[in-house]
Each structure stands twice: as C-alpha cells, then as structure tokens.
Length: 97
Picture 1 (tube, rainbow, N blue to C red):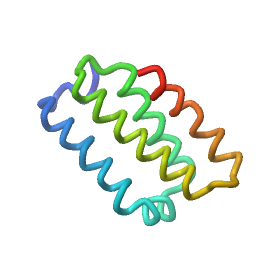
Picture 2: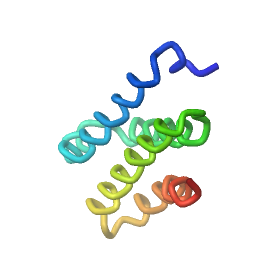
Picture 3: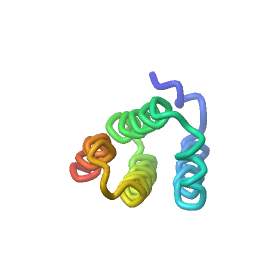
C-alpha cells in the first residue's frame, strides 16, 4: 500500500499539477537550491509514481511533471552528458507510457 493512499486522488493530482508548474516557473531556483542527490530522489519518485499508480489521471499528470523536468534539465545543460544520461531513464519511462 502506497503512503499516498491516505490522500484523496484529487489532492495528489493537484500536487502533481503544482509540481509541474513549479518546474516550469522556478526551475533555475530549484536546480540551484537542491543537491544532485535530492534531484535524483525527486526523479526516482516521479518514475515510481508513473510506474506504480493505478490512477490514470495521476500517471498522466506525473508524466507531465517528468516531461517538464526532463525538458528543463536538458535545456539548461545542453552540453552535459551527465545530465542527459541521468535523464535517460526518465525519458524511457515517458516513451513507454
């Protein structure tokens, strides 16, 4: 049982929308103020929710988060192979959803 199951699905979906908006609006600040470990944990949690959620709406919204996060990271770090490699698993999840 997921720890998110204590919340109504609408609340979780709203959080996913707000997270995507934060990635869109404040990515530079988020990237500067979070460690690479935290960024990796966030990415892994997004992947986990996409893969394990039974709710179609939540998976769709988390895919939106994943797409925005990937777009921002790759856009910010165009020449960094490390970032592209780190985001490759997120891209694969998006392709297969």
